Length: 354
Ligand SMILES: [Zn+2]
Image 1 (cartoon, rainbow, N blue to C red):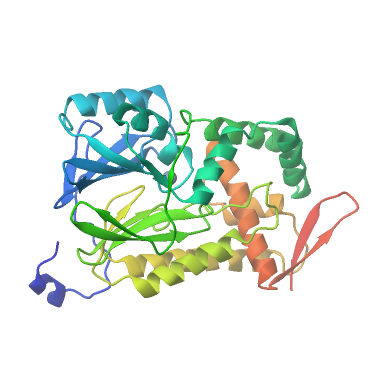
Image 2: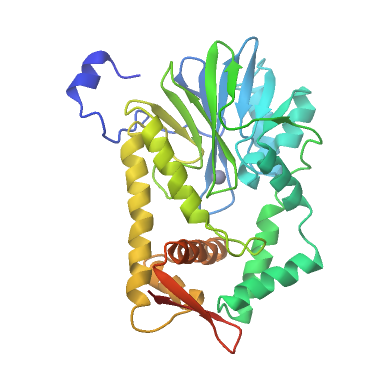
């Protein structure tokens, strides 16, 4: 935590990363009294996820659990035999239904016989991900990507990737305790306000302890990368980006400048409000790129992917996210009446700047 003199000497809104090094897979770092940071590997270009343990009486409340693969089970087993030896998990709180966060919840709850907390929408979303590989859903997803002008090869690649990624969870705990926006939850000696936000996932849980200036931001506000905000086939007209920007502006109003942000990926940081502004500006820049590209000729989402993501070399995992993310910008701009859409005789949607 910064000292009082630090706070006076520094501009209040400045991005600062108080920890130079992240923990290795077998290490635990205390980031605040009674708050432990663990970092687990992920088999993607985004190669890690953060887990936090919060002191909770004679045990520890775990926030997020890692992806549901064998390597993560091995990492947890080694941690409980090593850096976490003798520590008991009192409860498992999962921020959202993505497999890098919920993936090991079933394993952890089984091992410690402890309660499991999620928001209702995220829990049901997790149940949905585990049961989504049905023929009707594949047909719906295929039609969705084709309507956005993705060719057959890309569409099949997207369907394969999505199924594979979302399967990476061990079976979800069969029962949960519901967390809702505005709840107060006591963990050890601290009181946390539960905040939820949409955009990255439908009702992602964040925890804010005003007394100690701690904000567990999950994937809503990340330190260095922009969280994926995508539209998927099961809700093709969703304005996910509008919801995300709304959540960001609410957080920007609520959070003080000196809160320590503990994100789901990347490193802890100060400067929440400046980071929130950077994230909203980033999305507005992308909207402007789309508006520019659709000014003279109507374009499909597939044609706009390289306009917005030209600087990036995308692997298969990222290509899937890029398509969904592009469509999120389109839907937001349609909602703002910055674009108009038309469905061609070929069954493909095209967008034009209004
Ligand atoms: Zn994540």
